[in-house]
Amino acid sequence: MAPITSTPVIKQGWLRAIVFMLSFFVCAVLAGLVAGLFIVASPAANGIASTPSNTTLLALLLTAIISISLTIVFRRFIDRQPLMSMGFAWRTHQRDAWIAFCLGPALLGIGTLLLFAHKNISWTGLAFPAADLFIALVLMVMIALAEEMVFRGYILNNLLTAMNKWVALLISAALFAVAHASNPGITFIAAVNLLLGGLLLGINYIYTRNLWFSVFFHFSWNFFQGPVLGFDVSGLPLHSVLEPALKGPSLLTGAAFGFEGSFLTTILFAIVLLLLYALYENRYGKGFSFFK
Image 1: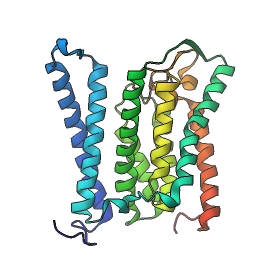
Image 2: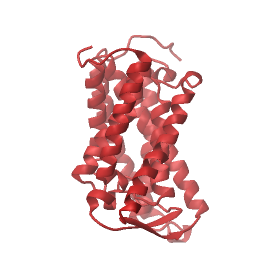
Image 3: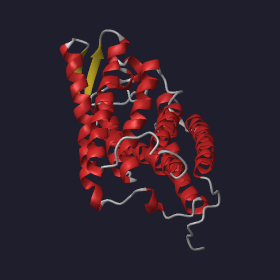
């Protein structure tokens, strides 16, 4: 195997990000097509029903696997950098990771309590589908790891080598939102929240160049939102512990897109973004400037 060098095949970081993003979108489309063919071709005797939910779950899993593989290939052979250079150092970033993990259920808890107080949500059942929860757990881990490697570890990482950190963060967040734009139930508020979510997932990275904050927050947000509280996750329905009944305007409940489609999420994400900005500026002492 050839030794890793510091000279990338494509010198411009922004161009590496573009080429990678185009490759990612192509792979995502192919994964969806392969999943659809697999479900259709599977015999009913095997217990796999030809349903959109099965196709979607398989497509998500395939996309995650392909995304991780694609990121590794690009980082190794295009960037010519070790995988760890994307931000996998653990020892000095454990605190941020666990704070991020707690942040997901904390924000969801606040939002759900507000909906409950306003009588926009009630629960009609309680279940513990162990097999379904395990599948959801594995899927949420894979999605969090894959999307963070793609959008923060590779795209944002490369954009940071070519432009101002705030511009790089905004572009990576916009690409993150675009990648989810075709999800079922998408609305304007949901799109805004996806953009804010991309900013929130990336703000730690522009200061630390470490992925664990975003991976842990991404996972806990998705897992507690869907398999635990019963909301759809970016338009994806999943088996859950709690079975919610939503009432009232979709602007508050998020409706078919899940809590990510709620205006409450907009407010919560904006507040946390400001708090994290103040925290990191205080911790790293770099001062606020769009032109720094």
